[in-house]
Image (cartoon, rainbow, N blue to C red; front, side, top):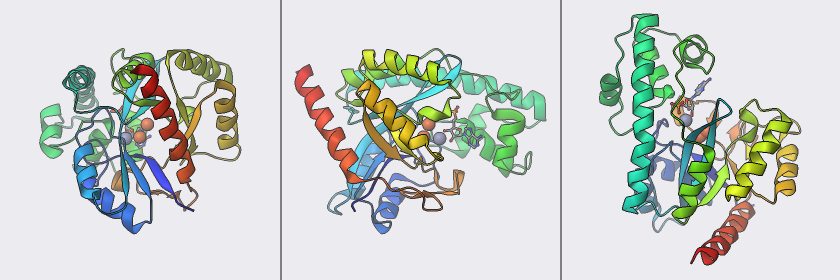
Length: 289
Ligand code: AMP
Ligand code: ZN
Ligand code: FE
Ligand code: FE
């Protein structure tokens, strides 16, 4: 069976491999397609596309937007956005400005709680190409001896319920979906079971987002347990959404997760999901034009 991975991070956000290294790894892992979905940036997309040219690996341009809804960090994946559009990049910069403000506030809190001399400028020097995320703060704290492990950094300081956490702005999932659609992309709700929403809240969210133009939901996901995938598939059916799948690969920043196959090879994402997604893209774009 041809397999794919539609959720992958590079050094342009909080992954540890460059786009070129991801392409090499995808080829040696036997994947047929890979979508690069860095947090709030498309900077690595062209490099990945160029690296894959002539290799037989299909690279799908992607992004993973961080948005805020019901006091949660909701992630919206966008595929095939016209990322060269100047107006799209301008809007993306507005999203990134909100992240910068929040990152500064978080660094200040971390300084207060740990006495660590962390600052956004320092993080940017350490990770020059990257959109700075909490994963970089965790890595910095670990590399400089202020915490022993990443998970301690999240438990004690950076996690959603920890004292140094600051939410990002007020970009909503609806804003992200509209932006993706306006630029020819296909919007998909990432890892719907990671938001600690009740079934009722999740259904309300899906109803809202579907109305806004959401086209897919990530049903095949690295952290699924037991009947999780079946449940998300049933939601997809209920709301008329396509299904996508991904490992959320971050390289060394999430060392248990392998590209394409996830944790302990538990993941297998069939190419047929991508075929359906491509159909949705065509239908959607012919409706727009
Ligand atoms: P941010 O977008 O700045 O809020 O950072 C989110 C990123 O931090 C996620 O995509 C993960 O890569 C990482 N992250 C969040 N929570 C954890 C956790 N508990 N353990 C390890 N990494 C995490
Ligand atoms: Zn991440
Ligand atoms: Fe995510
Ligand atoms: Fe992700």
